[in-house]
Length: 345
Image 1 (cartoon, helix red, strand yellow):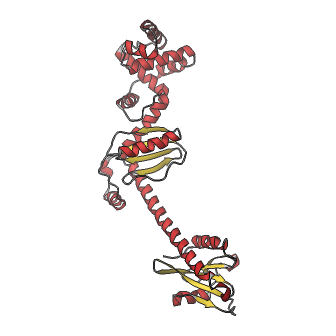
Image 2 (cartoon, helix red, strand yellow; image 1 turned 90 degrees about the horizontal axis):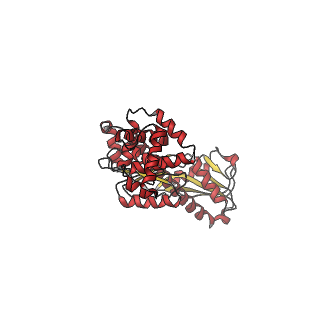
Image 3 (cartoon, helix red, strand yellow; image 1 turned 30 degrees about the vertical axis):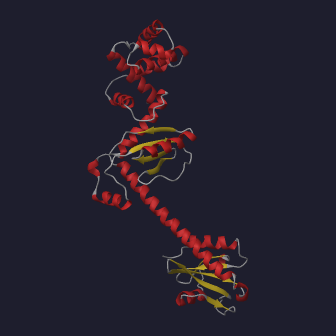
């Protein structure tokens, strides 16, 4: 363990705000690596070397011919190890009470900074692992090294996880429960991986407070598939004005249709044309309701607050304008596939 230049400069800056004396920080070799007098950085400090060799405070009563100035040079001890020296320049009789405070403050600041560095490194290590985990598309790709890293990090990769994607650039609370993982996967996508329903409920509440779009997958052994499902929920909601939270059979069916080899370009264009007029948008809304109610005339008319005859008239208009009959199941599926392509792609 050794004091680095960046940390040393932070210590000097912090102490200079409180103490009207020059502060130097030296490394284990006695070289000045931070100072209130920047011109001294890089110089060897004999007083610091003596403090390191003697493992105790070195008090210099008078300025020395070699350029060493009077003052206190005190070992910086962290975890029972001398990692450097902090020096305060001035008449020793004026520094008797200040010097111990400088030493203690330096050690406390250093301990905290080093602890933060350890946490930061651990956080980056976990983030790298999570990104690697999300990249795996096949369980057979789990290498012994990957499994060993999971064990070292305490990540149970044998369980099923649900993915929650929160689509927001806003900062949300940093903490996440043990056994759950939080990762910002894009500038506006936050991912939560968890096996706990209460974690999903907690983060859903956080998301609602910033009015963020949310999608939650079904439990999956392959976290890449869980992420895919959660993203598809958000995309499906945005394209169809739905407010689904979880990946359901409806979302699954929609994306299976999109991935099927059904040629619908002609009808996608007709949906675009239809959407350009108010009356056309009414027909599109009618079609959506009709499909989601599995072609049930009574329920669809009820939800649209219209008479059944009006609904039948609209369905006839859809047939005339799109060229397929929504009352025929095979043509209804083609129309819905076209609608999904229009809305989602």
